[in-house]
Length: 141
Image: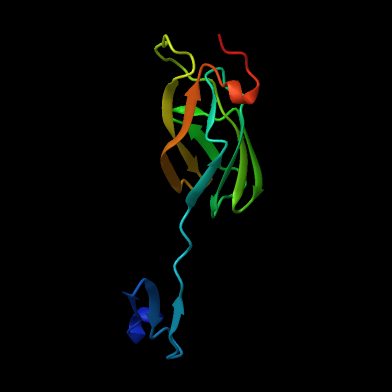
């Protein structure tokens, strides 16, 4: 038998680092773990039930080609700004109970991001839908 296995190669995880030892030359090395995919902020975090709000999602380890969902609905667009910022289009809210108070929140949903290699992150209670947002210049009855 030949190769690292015949020389007693070993790997161990120590304090979050992968340490490989005994790989042929007797040298050992460490590899830092990959940084975690994260969502740190959503701006704005409110929009209309009809969709169309342009939302900037900030965090870490975003990749070009990532998909974004608001609850179970896919974003209408995803623009990769850089590894810490995406600009996405909020979809329309699929279904909801109409309230007698059009200024009341209709639904609050999670935002999820999935990278091309299928790594994903979810930020719960990230975006709230309204029928009417007077502060955005929309006429409310």
